[in-house]
Amino acid sequence: MKIIELIIDEEDVYGGIDAISIVEHPAIEEDFVALNKQKEYKLQATDKDKKLLSGALLIPNKMIYRKERDEEYHIYFSRETVRKASQMYLQKGNQNNATFEHEMPVQGLSLVESWIIDDKENDKSNMYGMDLPLGTWFGTIKVNNDKIWNEFVKTGVVKGFSIEGYFSNKAELSQKEQKADEIVEKLKSLFKKHR
Image 1 (cartoon, helix red, strand yellow):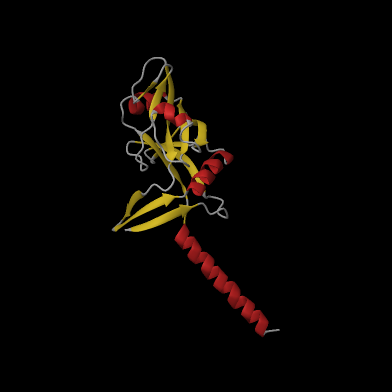
Image 2: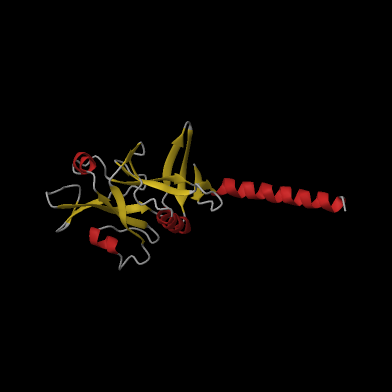
């Protein structure tokens, strides 16, 4: 099965992550935890909820299965791409962009904490019982949308995060760069002939 590394093409103004989606089946196969004032809990709620969801947003080198028409393949993101994506997401001011199951934009969800796991032993994600690889983008989403919280989080319909954005296929980008280099070399040889 083909494996494709996705990267951010810094020349592409639309590249990077546009939104974080709350989903039932996260592609990174990690569920979030919902938090109340006293402790963590898995998708249970009380009247005094902080309405916070914490979990992995993107995991480096995690093989993510994809199928388009009859083609099956895996994609993954390097640690460098995960870090760059997390930074660009905030630099572009996208922390309030959220969707439900990648289909419907939702209001009232905001990324309020964001970090890259650089030290597994001393990382805050350990408080939530999560054992994630170095380079993971971890975050906390504040849910100020009662419908989403009551109908989808408390009921366990959504279990994790998924990202939405535009990335380049590293192999295709390399091929484009190679073709561009070939064109430049041809132009150089033409200029040399006409001197």
